[in-house]
Length: 203
Image 1 (cartoon, rainbow, N blue to C red):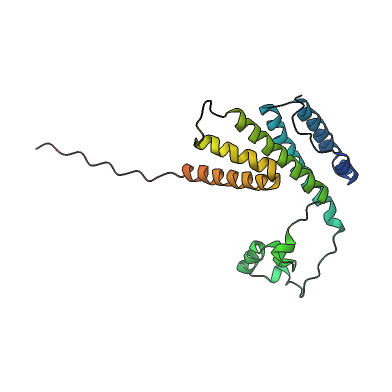
Image 2 (tube, rainbow, N blue to C red; image 1 turned 180 degrees about the horizontal axis):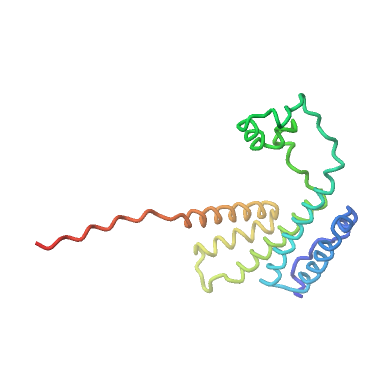
């Protein structure tokens, strides 16, 4: 493993929050994947970091599901009518209504709360990914480029952001990734084909 590679976050804090008790198999997979990630470098490590992020998301979902029974149920202001008394249209509207509206919760409070340990772990994984991307971009810098070469200016700006404000660099890269995804989605839309002119008949 390259000594200049950033160290992965420690899993001890996440283990202390009960992650291993919630999903023992998933936790063992995360520990094994984190060990393999430390042993790799370059593009292989980037792919493992992405897999580690996906495994972390799945573990977070399971931890949230395990904590749901502990929540205090919200008593609705009025009792809903019996299912047998509902008309077909009313039953359909009730099924289509958002669950947070039926429970008397606002959309802001309806979202599941993320564990602080998992949020910190996710942030560190994101920083590792950004540092790898910048490092690879620096390695692909054009040779003998002039001082006003656009490629070199972009790389110089990324290097300054990495040294001066790493947090701003993380937000900037997330914004760029979002724009690239939107651009790819726009290119995927099919453009209407122009109608071909009808063949002319023989005189």
